[in-house]
Structures are given as structure tokens and as C-alpha cells.
Length: 356
Ligand code: PMV
Image 1 (cartoon, protein in one colour):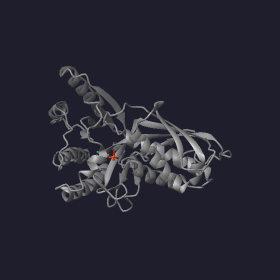
Image 2 (tube, helix red, strand yellow):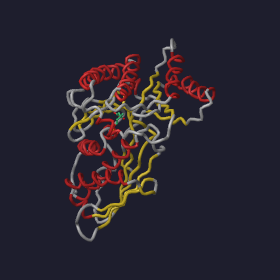
Image 3 (tube, helix red, strand yellow):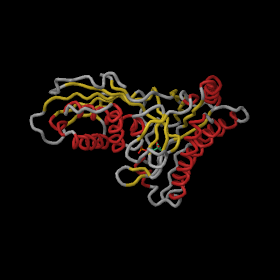
Image 4 (spheres, helix red, strand yellow):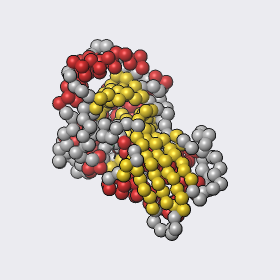
């Protein structure tokens, strides 16, 4: 329970509120959607700790209660038209339930703790922080009495409409999104998942092989699944992997976790490669690193797995007892291969939080 959550705000005329929401890394990948941002298969993710977005909304009265009026800044800079449009759309959707938002002039300031286009999903943390902040504002303006759980569920629902994977960022340490994964999982919003103790702290070292923004956006990528030759096979695979992943996470089975995590990462890239318009995102260095990582790991019984999102950067997930060994391997690889690449170190996080 967030202690600040039910704090009574008497003055709703103007004010400021702020939410922090983390990014997440999918172990079971969401790839392909239908209808209103509904996934074609369930997904499971680990919530991150240090990669997060902080979004502050300052509101004040507007002269006429027309459509939402807002200004959005990322790191004190105006964002591109495309992202501003996405922000405007989410405000409009949330204001349909909380119309008093339309009476306010909103100044929204957002900051990310991690650089853009690094293989960390900024849309997951960005859109979830925005959904949480807007929901919080709507709730205050309307004096709505909502339990913390109901609030998070609604925020996850709205975050999903902003960006699919964002709905999982509301929860920690892990989250499940999509019907059929568990008895109560749904396509509408994510639900939290707590694994075996051994999975409560997993390191994630992210090797940034390219900082160039993706050539194919994730929306365009999802679309490639619509008429993909392997669509039905992928849905069956993801459902089976989800069941096995949840079993592995519950029982503390690292071998199974490693096998499925890597199968999902490679399946995602296999799907991109085999789509009608092929998308090749792995770079020679990504492949070289994966080959060397697998050779290094061989026979050591390390609790370590790689995963990859829709880009060339590689996430190495591993248990704390292997920190020195895995981290040394990564550093030595960079030195020996003379590759000036950045590494971002993260780990399992605790989820979204209201700051004031
Ligand atoms: O939320 P989106 O539309 O950015 O899609 C995310 C897709 C992947 O990152 C590739 C997988 C996932 O489940 O996060």
C-alpha cells in the first residue's frame, strides 16, 4: 500500500503530482496484436529497478473546458510530433472517464533515467508513468474513492492503450499480461506475479550494440504478425512457453527459465526475419557476443540467460551469485574485442510509485 495514496487533497484548482514507473524486460514476448491493443499471445516480464521514467503533472485552471490542453516535455525538451500525439491520445482516453481533466491546463514533465533507444523500452516506462499520473489526477479531481489495487488495475488498463508492454510496468516483481496464462490473467490489463525467492533478485546487464533508433517501430513489427505464415504456430509456442515459464519461476528452476527465455528471444527475431517484409535487427557484434557468451557458459552450470527485444542490444539475466563471473566476462569481452560499447546494469525492481 502506498502511504501517500489516500492523502486527501482539498485544493484541486491547481497542483502537482508525480509518478515513477519502471521499464520491464519480457521473458515471454508480446509480438502481434489485434483490436484495441490486445495481444495475440500472453507475455511475462521482469520489472526493472533503475531504468524508470518519472512523470510530473502540473495542472491549473483553463479558461474554457474544451478538449485537453497540454504541454509535454521529455528532459525539458519538446518531443517529436508522433510521441506528442500518443500523449494527447492517452489524455483524451483517460479524460473520457475523468472529464474534469479537460478543465485543466496540463504541463507534463518527464525524465528517463536511461538513454533513449538503448534496448530498454522507454515506451513501457514512459506510457505507464503517464497513465499512472493521469489516473491519479483524474481520481483527485473527481474525488474518487478507489482502493490501491483497483487504481493500479485501471492504470495498467490505460497504460496498455498507450503501449502494450507498458501495462506490465505497473506491477512487480514480475507481471503477466494476456488471457490464458493463468486463471485470472486477461488481455485488458496486466497482473502481478511473485516467483520463487531465487528469482526475486536477477541482474540484467544490457549491452548496447547500437544507439540508433529502430528502423522498424514496434507498432510496425506487431503488424507483421497479422498475416505471418507462422502466426498460429507462434501463438501455440508462446502459450506453451508461458506455462513452462510460470512453472520455472514458481519452482526456482533456472535451467527451464534459461531455455525458455532464450527460445523466446530467438523466436522473436526468427519471426521478424521470416515476416513478409523481413526485419533484420541483430548486428554482427550481437551475434558474436551471443556465440561467445554461450561458449563461456558451457559446462559451468551458470544461472544466466540472454534475452533480446526488437533491436540489436542484448540483455544478460543472471543470479546474484554469478555477478563477478558474468560481469567480468562482459568487461573482458569488450576489452578483448575492442568494442567501445556501453553496458547498463539493472536488476529486478519493486514497481511503480507515487512520489508526492
Ligand atoms: O509495447 P510495444 O508495442 O513497444 O511492444 C513491445 C514488444 C517487445 O518489446 C518486443 C516484447 C515485449 O513483450 O515487451
